Amino acid sequence: MIKNLFKLFFFLFFINLIFFSSIKAENSNVDRISKNLRCLICQGQSVYDSNSEFALSIKSLISQKIAAGDSEDDIYNFLKSKYGDWIVYEPEFNKYTLLLWLLPLFLFIFGGLLIIRKLSINRSLK
Image (cartoon, rainbow, N blue to C red):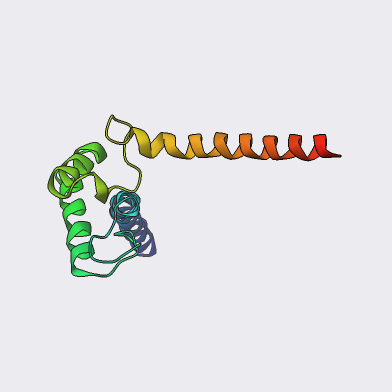
């Protein structure tokens, strides 16, 4: 009898392990995707951090799309087609986001040149 209980315990343990690991994997995908999406209702919050109705519906939509077998890119493309590129925190590099990606680089180079110029002027005055 103890052997049978022992077998039953291990059987239930492994069934639970398999079941809960698949739920955890799905939730981690939903979390990763929702962290990269803006909540259109809340200012400055991601869908992951927000508890608005919009954020909850997007999380539900992401779960449904993952369950249907859609890839992460498919989900992003669907949401971008519905809400625009602004919904994604990290937009992809294309002709419309070129300035967005290159402006920090230009500002960094310009600031560095200003600092070098200022230092060279100060050295020549001494």
